[in-house]
Length: 97
Image (cartoon, rainbow, N blue to C red; front, side, top):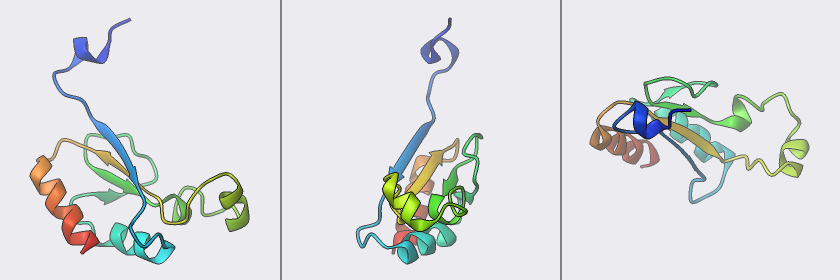
């Protein structure tokens, strides 16, 4: 079985974070204000993607059930793609404000 190191020079990355104010509204606003990260439920691609599980992939699960399973309403998940890292950082900074 080949390792990633044998197949490629650089690696993709997944990042999850919770905004400082830890609110559903703030996380949704950040996700909606991103320009380079595309909102997507599936995070498997070469482009940078963002998912807000509480309003996307897990929206059909009642809030109390999400809470029981440990899913924080303000969680954001990013799949970092092939775009320039500085451009992605700038996009996150402007979206977070």
